[in-house]
Length: 305
Ligand code: ATP
Figure 1: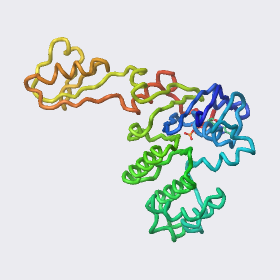
Figure 2: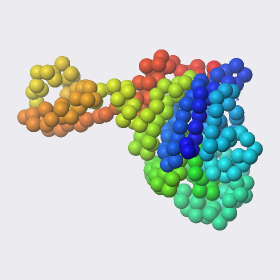
Figure 3: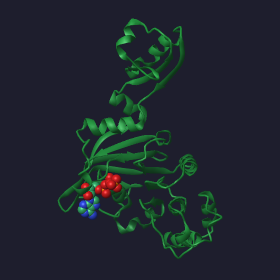
Figure 4: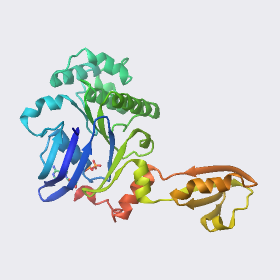
């Protein structure tokens, strides 16, 4: 059974079509990165999966059930959700906030202390939330999302406000949860660093699916070149010269992805070669490619469609 299944889902808000015929299948233990410009339809997709809104057309199934139905109450206990720009009751302590959400979710309060520890807030658990920094509030939000060991995590901008170490800790925690069979959807505008933690990426533009697949699949779909940076006093073979450009840091050369290994083999033994770096298209490069190749580079108006 798919944990999440969207079939030809459309969502319109008062004449604004936020999602067009979206198909999505997520299996247990998969981590999906959901990316797109402002107003692309990411939050709408998450709200549909949570059952907070219903689809205008098409079918949404979560753990095989329609999440908007009131009988889906048990299903909601299996979900963990972190919304963008999380905010809490400022007068409560971190521990009280977590215990409050534990009660709402019907989860034992016992897990709250250990969750605070997991997100690095055990020292601050008895302080009021109004004294928390932005990153501490975000960590509290993560602890809230992890209440009750959810089987499906929906995280909207989970690393916003987290410092680099806390971001690493967060992704390690996602890896552990994935190893335990948890499925996750991560929405983020911060693409660097995400790619090694996701199994698949789905890129939305103006409510339409622009691309979907593992980062490697997307590299092949996009057919962007691999970029070599070479340093040293070297003479390139004649057939590589047209691909090369000199700049102040050395020689820069773009070759088709499928020629990467053969090019490396040709370069490696060249007299005078002191250093060689190879850059594959990053998730950010791929995102920009798919957004621009669908004529969606001017997306500044999207949020106010
Ligand atoms: P962001 O990255 O800015 O959070 P997003 O990808 O999450 O954006 P959504 O919030 O899903 O985008 O919005 C998709 C589209 O639907 C936008 O054009 C938005 O203006 C519109 N929209 C969302 N909610 C409503 C609503 N309640 N009423 C009317 N339009 C809405």
